Image 1 (cartoon, rainbow, N blue to C red):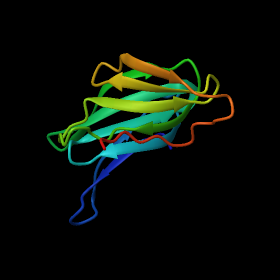
Image 2 (image 1 turned 180 degrees about the vertical axis):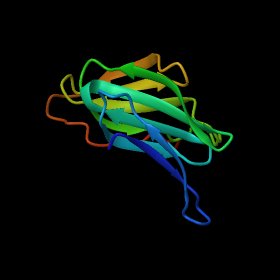
Image 3 (image 1 turned 30 degrees about the vertical axis):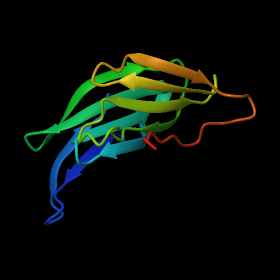
Image 4 (image 1 turned 180 degrees about the horizontal axis):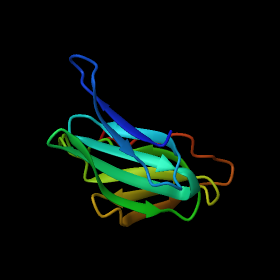
Length: 126
């Protein structure tokens, strides 16, 4: 895929089609529907952060990670509507990163054991 589509829940009409940068093919997505946030991972370690404002998808920020992205999550913590952080796993260095939103600055990196491959990630309180 080369972008994201915003579709009406009531009548299933296409409201908007957002196109990713030319060099980026989207290969995974995570959505916080209640907070109007969308996180997309693309080829070559590209991470895109979009928000839904005024019925339109808007690119808020994008970064390039040092390795291919294996998994992503943008669920909010502490019963908030909007997520303040997103998490992602990387293939080559086998690590999990927590990034602040909307800056996408890394606030925490955890290297995993070499016997583990990050295939999914979920942030939650318990």
